[in-house]
Image: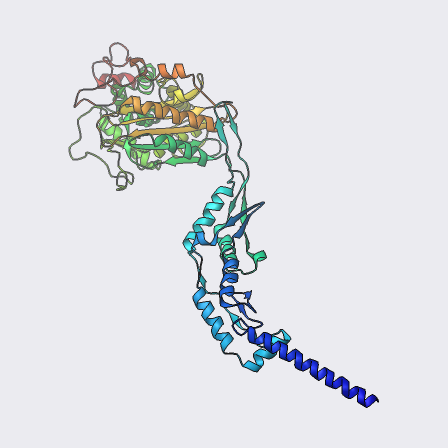
Length: 538
């Protein structure tokens, strides 16, 4: 009985197995045009799909947007926008060939058990435009980044708003993840997180001032040469500061200093008259008389040679005077060669007989300032010829120069500004020491138009004044200066009292400030010749 039952059960099982295999064979036959079990195309499981369905499935995966994460923001990026293209023809061909090449019995067995003993993998064939992808990432970053900001002036409140921290996308570090996401089949993994780098708020330094000054200079059809020095910290800024420019009356600062170096005691009344006329009223004639004092004889040409040699010893290698003011040129010595005037990349058409740079003049002013404080290079180089009192006297003389359209007009009224201005032909400039609450600083500013013989003051003066104001505000962030627009408008026109230039000078006479009609304030009886003045002075 048991054996009969076992035999019946075996027959039933065999019958069921035959039926099952027959049914599976029927299903397998119907699925012969579909992809075998275990096949993936571009990472997509395509088992049981026709070639047409394979194309649809793969295309759907890879045309889906990738998600770009930027900190807390998420942005979808369309692969087509970055030139992503699938080579479906190649992938379908490989898939079809792989499905046709399988052993029938092995393929049937895998179909029945639903598992492939040798999975068929068709790799992804696709390309994209890397440059366009990078551009897209950069564009997204530009919208989402928050660069650190620096302090900025808020005119409405007449105060500075301090900078704020920010963050920037590291494009190079982020790009591989975005590129990888394009080739990811798993929709959940088609995400790329951009790497950002935190930035600290920009410090309140000369970089911001440089940007501001350059903004002013963009309005000028010529070259601006600027030098700024914080006398308390040593921080400096130079914009074309090593470019050769005409010496103008600005180099009279050196004449004042060399005069004090030449005299052995306090200046007498005659010498003081000459010093004041030169430093305050910018007298050319008196400047030449001071050069006679420097020479120790009636020879201003020797005086400029001594001055130039002194400047060289101080390291001011770009500063020289070959010919005194309004004197005939020297035969065989029309100019000097310096590192600044040998440059080929920039040119200001400087006066060949009298040149300097903004940096040289700024450095000289700093030397005078530190000398007055009891230290610095001047006292080290000339310990027996200069004293702090004499250096302070140079500053005091320049502080009485009240010409107000340049450095002075860029700072509040009543502030001590020891400066020497100068202009002639195509170059206007001013150099001085400003004593302010925020810091004592040197400012030297020149504007030159090398392609013209005459620089119009209506163009140059407003720019020079505004640069001065920006420098003052940089050093006085707690109390910036905003001049009254009405007063500013009234002060645009220079007047004879301020030593300013006339509206026009006949051709051939476009020289430095014209000499005074008389001796420039010399005492009676010593105005006939330079020689008589020198004799009276020394």
